[in-house]
Structures are given as structure tokens and as C-alpha cells.
View 1 (cartoon, helix red, strand yellow):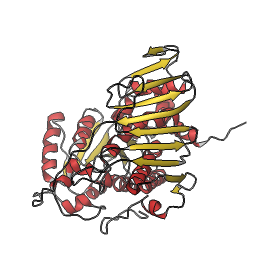
View 2 (cartoon, one colour; view 1 turned 45 degrees about the horizontal axis):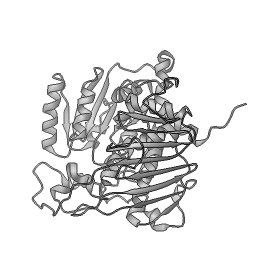
View 3 (tube, helix red, strand yellow; view 1 turned 90 degrees about the vertical axis):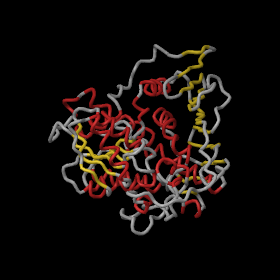
View 4 (tube, helix red, strand yellow; view 1 turned 60 degrees about the vertical axis):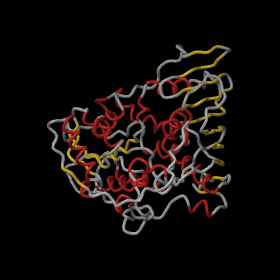
Amino acid sequence: MLQKSNRRDFIKQAGMAGFGFYYFPNLLRKPAPSDRVRVAHIGINGMGTNHMRWFAGIPEVDIVALCDLDRSHLEKAASKLKEWRPDAKPDLYADFRKVLERKDIDAISCATPDHWHAQVAILAFQAGKDVYGEKPLSFSVKEGEAMLKSQKETNRIFQLGTQIHAGDNYHRVVELIRSGELGKIKKVHLWKTGKPPVFEKATYQPIPEGFNWDFWQGPAPEREYFKERSHFSYRYFMDYSGGVFQDFWCHIADIVWWSLAPEKLKWVEARGPVSPGIGDTPESLDIDFKFKGLDITWSSTPPNLPGVGEKHIGAYFEGSKGSLVCDYGSKEIHLNGQVLTELDHVPQSIPRSPGHQQNFVDSVKSRVQPESNLAYAKAMTEPMHLALISWELGKKLKWDWKKAEFKHDAMANAMLHRPYRKGYDWVAGL
């Protein structure tokens, strides 16, 4: 008799969807029209440069286009690519829509600021392109919903740029948590140290030549230019991002959603001061999430718990029989009065990644969704957005997981999406 899968099973399966074809490649792979994947990079400064370097190192990838709103970034990126792939001859663009018009491009990587992620991805899906998207997934809850809807309608491939997901340590932590050796996990503590930089005052100056500031702002509210608002430091302004918390949430929450697939959020409460200076993201945060059968906390300081020590980022799993603390590359188990680094009797059950970007390229060819796929990424990202809304409003918020809206709070629900600025509202329904 077939059993109906619940949402928890779905999320776990979604997080593992990319692994099946490593066991049966001849059965699950579909012949690609070409052995080569033609990639365009949109947003090529900072992490965008890393995207370009990673994909340039994959032999079956051809980088055929580079796009950025800052001409200096384009010139620098083209020079770098020449070092890594002397044979590359990419076309250069200032408008990503021109890139999406090209029929010969199979996939894009997107490393724009956060407030552009959703529109770039959705328009790419509609143009028949697969997407490797930098984190966070989206700027708002409704954007994540729209991205998933579009991806399903167009049958495109998506991988979130959570590169740490591909590491062996995370795979092994998931196996250990799922094994039940620590008993029922009742609480998880997450943390990330560090404060945003303090910008005492705005550095007003003319917009640099070759930089399209209006297009850079795009769907965000129109603001006067000062350099602190743009490029890397944009993340410390709520118009475009959510500070240190939004920058690092998915890197460590990833291990929780992969291991436990938290579901049916009941409420969230976030507390913390705003950053001093002209930035307006949180200086620090303490957050409580109440899920069905699981409590999750977030803090800007490490919790005073065994094994945490000086870890600047980490997750601490409290189980009924033992505990486990981990960060990107290490783990420590407290069980039966012992401190261990491994449980050898727990078998390996999750196939290891071929590499985060390689996983995406393999998925483009096979049409099997990768590890950090969109359904999984949306479930993991949504609580981050809800916590920031709680912080901005300064109160505990009750969540109706069935309706995907806050209970009896019109103001909070209005913050599930920010209407796009006129002239940059290119996706219907957002």
C-alpha cells in the first residue's frame, strides 16, 4: 500500500534530489545536445569573480558572456578570464536582459546584489536558461515563492551558491544526525559572530563614470548615490540586503534543514540593536524560532555549550541522548560521557558531491535537480526573511504555515514583499 509523503519527507528528498544519478548514470542521464555547457556570468565583482573562476576550471564549460553594470568590473573580469582560460572570448554586456535574449546560452550564474536575485532568475527561467544563483535565494518571501513557481513551470535547473554544502563534513553531520544515535533532536543553536562595519557618514561624490547607478538600484527604492550603498557594502543597507545575518544564515542553517527539515513554523521573535552610523541592518541579533517539535535559536555570540569554544560560526544539536557541535569543517560529538569526532558504526549513506559547481553542470546535462535545489533553498531561506520582519517591527510574530502568512498582522504581511520600483517591475505578479 502506498503511503502519502508528508512535507518533511519532501524537503529531505528535495535536498537529496541531485544524488540519484551518481548511482545510475546511464539510467538517469538524458543525452545532452552537446557535451559542452555555455555559461554567462551576470554580476562579476566579488563573489561573481569567484563564480567565473570556478566555472572556468570545469573543462566542459565555455564562458561566452560577461555582464555587469560597472564597466571597470567588466574590463577587470575579462582580463582575469583570459588568465584562466586563454581561449575564452566572451561578449561583454551592461544589461543582463541582452544576455538572456541569446539562444546559444545554456545557463547563467548570478552574483548580483540580493535585491536583484529573484528577477534575474525568473527572467532567466522564462528565457530557457538554467541558473546558478548566489545566496541568499531572494530578497523577500514572495520572491522565493515566485521563483519556485516559475522554475516548476519552465522545468529549469537551479542551484543555490552554498558551496559549503558540497563538503564532506556537512554530508557526514547529516548522516550522524539522521542515524538517531543522538536521540530525538529537540533544539538547535545557530550562531555567527561579527558586526557590520560602521559608516560614520555618507561619502557623497559623483557617480563613477561607466557605472549605471539607476539600473543598479533597479527594483529597490531610488536613493541618492554614495559609495557605501553600492558594491560590496550594499549588504549593510536594508534596501538591498539584511547585513551579517542575511549574509551567513544559509551557510549554517543549511546543515539544520538538510538534517532535520524543520516544518510548521509557529512563531518567530528577533531582538537586537540597529547598527550605528548610516547603515541600518542589525548590529547583532538574538532570534527564537518555534517549529513543530523543534526549537531553533540564532545568536551573534557563541552559546556557552560544550565544544563550542571560539567557533565564529556553528550549529549545536541537542538530542535526548547526546549532542553534536559543528562548523564548516569540523564536528564534535558528546555521547555517553565521551567526546568523539566520529561514530564509525554509522554507515555512509549520502553520496558525496563531485563539487558544487560541477554538480550544477552535471544537472544541466542530466536535467536532474542538484543538491542545493530551489525547493530546498526556499524552505531554508524563508525563516530568515520572517526573522528580519520580526526584528524590523520589534515584536514576536505568529506564522500560519498553511496560508504562508502572519496571523492577524497586516503590517507584517505587507512586508512579505516590497513592490518593485516603476520601470524595473519586469516580473508579472511581483
